[in-house]
Image (cartoon, rainbow, N blue to C red):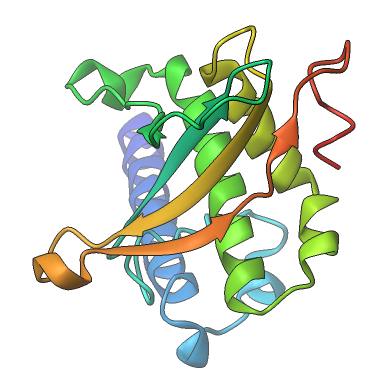
Length: 188
């Protein structure tokens, strides 16, 4: 009899704790203007800070395009989209270690997009870590004997009319690749 009461009380406590956690999580993740800082009420219990897509949903894709010249400084190749593809399937919900590289590149391209939209000084942008990361991804996509490369970040708005679908974000200068380090110091 006593063990039934203990089990019932433990079950009620667990359900109550879970319900409290869910309600606190929902309250913690409301838009910032309504957000209450619940940390002072949780006694150190961590609440997840999920933002998903709100309040600023993504409406564009960022693409990385590159072109290169031959070692003798010949004509530039046409722009090529070298944005890494991301595999989508049911298994990726559970296990997707291959998403880290493309996500890091995407985050770097987003940072460069923010810098560009805020009219950051181009010299400062070229010395930034995101610029170096995008340069490295671009370098990996061009021929080993390329003389120089240039990359372009392009916003693509899939739902926009065709004449407004693409908007350039940032175009690098021509970066020479003649150094032993593969042009790393030339990129910043």
